[in-house]
Image (cartoon, rainbow, N blue to C red; front, top):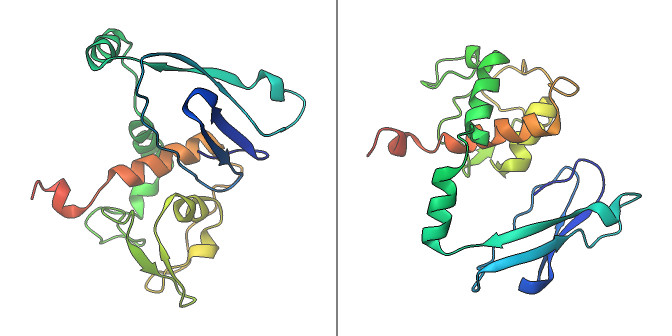
Length: 180
């Protein structure tokens, strides 16, 4: 989860789970629903004028019901598929070549891996680092590459950044890509 503006909370009282959604950071929440039904979700952090309108539902189904619902739904692109399309449209493929022969690093298998930056700091390649590389590329300069990555701040919105992050995450490792 992330926020585009202020702190929000993803809160499902029936499951006793609550997690902050923070601007510029990614957080996640995992829970297991043990009873089918429909449950309210709220923003539990006073976040501004429309706070009371930030509500929704969590639908818990049996596995067969979920499979039937999924099969009946409209086919849409996943975030990773949308990110892949955007990655190509923005021309990222001209520098980030999968084989590692481009002017920028290959992104295959980079997610979750520690990377040493030009300033000597080592960071895990996570959602925040990928986000920073897209919006503030000079903050994650890699030592063996020229700092030629342009900023996409103002060119892509937060949803599109999330799509690009999902695409990079989907690239997995080289071993999984080759089926080894």
